[in-house]
Length: 530
Image (cartoon, rainbow, N blue to C red; front, side, top):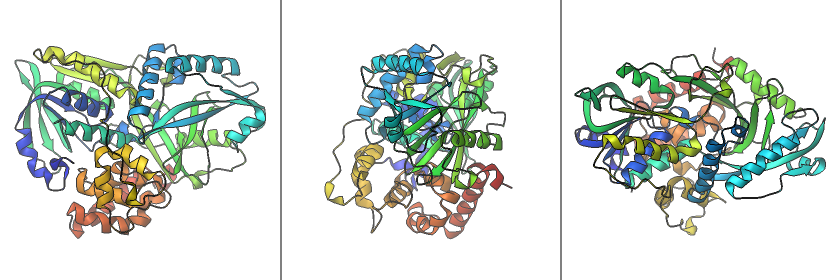
């Protein structure tokens, strides 16, 4: 069942839980931290995760939503990263079905454009071999246009199709955290590190501040891991370490599915600089991304797309879908995430390697970099490097299935088509309880999305929702699936969730105003922020 400390009144358990002595303190509530919590907890460690904002608040809710093998990394010679990613993609497709789903991609072969047919097919042959698969990829012009209607026809010779996968990144984090709790792990959001606790010069825990009450408490831990992603240098500075990261921003546009209708993803090389850009169907909308630029804003502020990035992505759409006449007026939301990339000084941000890195400095083990797809590999590698801090811990670090098998949903629930599979993937053993907790008409989808109204009730009741943006941007994704961040459905959201959250009218009004201001400043188009 859901963890008691994630229920609305569960924060009362915080002080007692923080007073315990832990084997492992994990700082950072994105997919890397969640993966470490799961792999540590299932191997017998008493593990605690703390996150300064909300779970998946940073990069792990603002990714491109792709679980992919990294086809483009082959061009950079990163064969080991690609092989590792392909293996993990295949594992996630098996073990997290309903949450990680196959996604086909179409790539047009145009006269005079790179990469050409030969180099692309060579890369895919390597890709297939790594996955233990073999399939036909190239299709002649007319057949390809049937698969990818609306694309530019001028100069089109044919096209290439291949398969990767997609996910709801924030829900993946939540599912991993839920699984970790079943093994005894604990996770709290809105707990920030104020300083590192030391014994004899070695880091052994941290001093934390509850961002809701501003109270301070010290946590003791035999080993401390920083899984703070792009924020890692800020924590390393507590140890006097020099910066090693190059924060890069990846921004995205969200369009209604009817305005950019796609049966499969369309991948292309941007006409301006040759960078890969994609558009693909996701959760009832169409995502377009991504940029890859240096992020100079302070990391305490939420990232947001710039006008230059907006123009860049729209230029790609105009080039690939010239007959659709797409414009800013078609964009219903935007989002931007900051990637943790190791700084090697390359002039082109896209040339920086995406491998993960680990540094042990005065007892603080930092893990950063890497890809969403390989979070399990990163977690196990991190625990391997933590062994010197836990000398008596000798657990086997061989990979295990991400999630345990769970019973299928009762088919008497009268769910919309495909929703049983979707709920099983996102909620695992809790899917049945979620469906049974639904009230009248709550097993219907929110129009324009694939989200059930019942998911709002469940999140408010059981998933540590402490701010309204937790609910609408991460527990559900309604904030980026609906124009205006979902302002039009706010009365029903309030009717469902305010009693579950036990918020007063004054609290709800303040939260709604704060959420809508946040959405306007960071999830709308730049021209709408004035």
